[in-house]
Length: 473
Image (tube, rainbow, N blue to C red; front, side, top):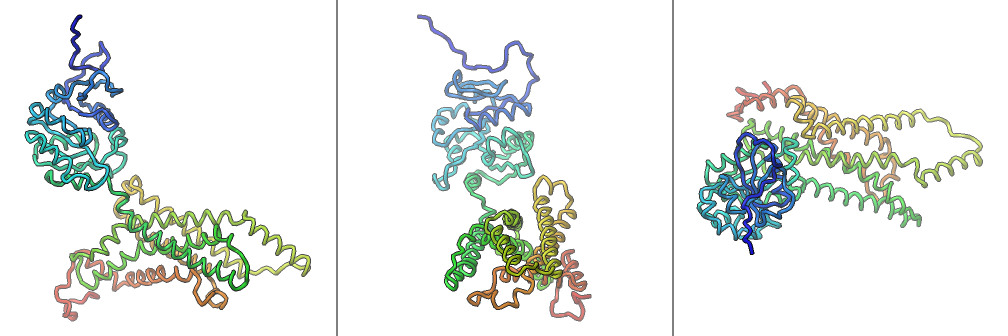
């Protein structure tokens, strides 16, 4: 019986190809999706890659030009090792402590939930192999992002570790891959980095709660006013209007309110700066959080406006509308034998209502498009500020005016106040009207001049001495 000697290293390079110029060799422990994607990207960048595997000869498909070795041999061949395996499989690394001594170990692992272990994975790895330099990095990127590279300005690599030289080595690799590196300090910050991927839309929580709350409130408010009240008073079942008519009232109401909430914090901040006489004092925490989620509020507002447009477009094809139109036409022709006179005022009102609504929605779309990173990165700060601030307030004006035209003189009719409650559109006009009035006050020359001086660094050192240093000078 012959003893078969298996080579410790298996090269995936085609035989007969010319040797490439010597490049830095990096090691990857783990041949899963993340390990394969990372290896592919490193090879495309110009690095040489060696994989450490329990089964070097049967570890599945890997990128071309990569090598596969045993864990011990792979660890000895490279100075920087990516640990692309789950924490529960870290135990075998303790046996490789001699081979990994002095190496830079990049921990890219995550957990399935928060507080699953008493310590971070990177801290646990550092305790297992005290002679190595553990750096937590790349754990906030998906396999797709690693394989395809950064697609926008938000592809950032967070890292932390105790050794400055080790972090510098990882930073160089991340930079060559096209990512932006953010150093979060020592390895004690690893738990925070491991919690990042477990967060579900953290910046969208407040806007989504507001959207759900407003939608639920106005849905039930209008349900009681427009559906239940008619059934109780007139014994008429119009519950079918819930699906389209009621929804088409709720969506624009929520959209206008959320658009107002985008610009209200900026107005409040401006008045706070005028009151304090300085820009160097922090805003309250609630106002800071509010201002940080304005983009999400605006995008949700645009989504509701888009739903309003779609629901409006299907109105002519609804069975209820077609039935009503045909019934009215037959009634007028047969019973009265005459057609109604053309109402010029009504024509002006409806055309203006639709025209202003279309203009408002067009500006809405412009705001949404320019908020995309790929578009905003191509704009200067002045251009971006002009669109999001000045055109944003113009959008709010058009949408508010559109709602006023919808209401027209209905507020004078007693029949509009069912069960002594105002219509939904009247309630939604309160907030945008307040925002527009406050913005007009800020645009007054004397107020605008004072606010500009404050934002340029001027401070009111003695607010009681208005005779010597008046803001309105």
